[in-house]
Length: 278
Image (tube, rainbow, N blue to C red; front, side, top):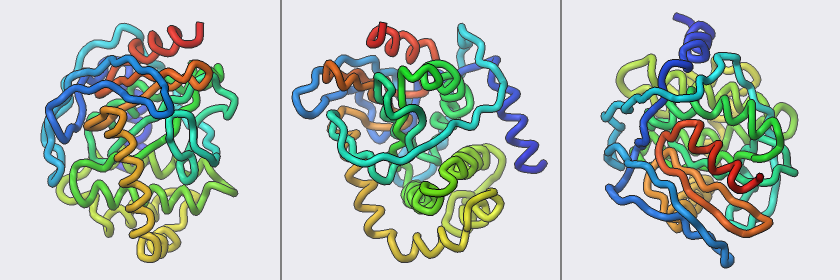
């Protein structure tokens, strides 16, 4: 089965089920987002499935029926770069952003390429968010890293930064090709698929990304990028997040925020977004 076929399979099979309120977690606690700069917060935390921070996740996502079917139309969101620090104290530099810079709300999305619950969100909820609230300029999504399953998680996170550095000026949408391909590979191979060598082999197959340049970036900039990613992960922890996928919906006008933790259905995001924008 080719990667192109696998991508079509994933895009065509997302309507029937949705991952339960679960995620890849480093602890068993449920938490509330705690914004910086005096922002107030509310919480909508889901339960978290368990995985260890030193090994690959072995728990399988629980699936429940999603009340709002998600279209199987392919989604390739446009990405752009930005700079500066938001009112929620998220540094935008170095992170891909999906959606209009003028969107009313920020959705900060912390993920781990090795987390099966992140994969479920990517397949089943994110596409509809892009087609609805992102397309309508209600929300822009900032893609953040929260590697919490082991060394390969950090390697994948650093590699994502290297890919973004390479393509962000001239072909930012090429990042999405890489991003989606890595999540697809998570479910179709066995063994240590996510080590550096295998991820570089995977990168070679992605149109618009130079695997040799990514390899050089990994060798030359890993220490700096690890430091940046650790700061990004700590920001999530300061917001009360303890696993992936995790989200903070932030309203810069009112300086308020709400978190959603785990692979939540589209309806939860829709409800939160509408409550802040309507």
